[in-house]
Image (cartoon, rainbow, N blue to C red; front, side, top):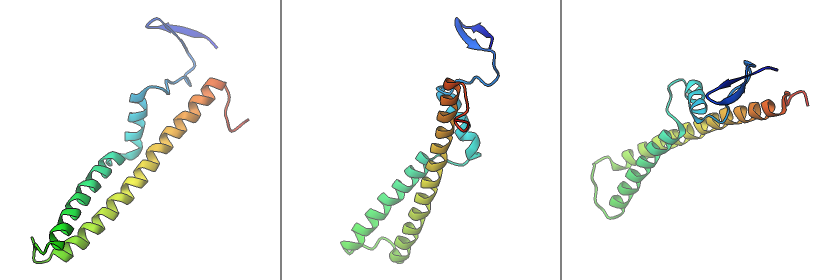
Length: 119
């Protein structure tokens, strides 16, 4: 395998050589896999905001302060939205972790110079 020097670093000319430690590459691949959908952290932030709102509504209801005439419906609706956001968060986190796992496996294969499936 031949090598070349770039920016003072010796690198492989092998087209299969990638910088798997490059955080930008990892982020780009995750964004590409998610196809523009929000990241798990964004789902988490939205869920937490709704959980805070739900908690405040429950506190007000417990004190007898009815902010809305249909407070029970709003509480049920918030609970449904929170469940949906949690599900999206879990699924997206799983996808993000899978991308990182695949890159980790590829990095290990690159370091070993062989496919882990062949070992």
